[in-house]
Amino acid sequence: MAQYEKGDYVKFEMTHEQSGEREWVWLSVDNSSDEQQVVFGQLDSEPVVATDVKRGQHLAVSYALVREHKRASDFQTE
Image (cartoon, rainbow, N blue to C red):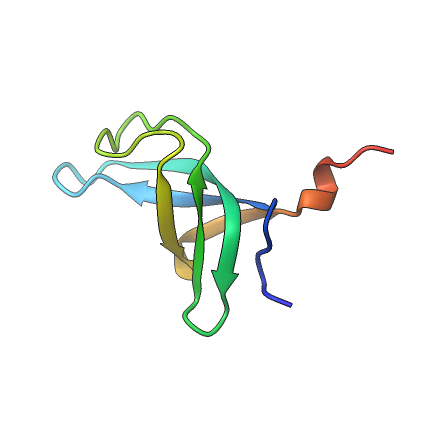
């Protein structure tokens, strides 16, 4: 079982390449590779600092940048 699974959410840090400003955004997980230490998914936040990416855009994010993880089961209600 991979560390991050489809339907999970991860919060990760983005850094604007030119200004160095940082912000935290959420990614809706499609899949991940423990071997490559990368999680793939769609950006679920509208970045303010990193204006070169948009909500809904597909991204690959290093596990090293992930700061918070919410499992899909955390959002399910009975």
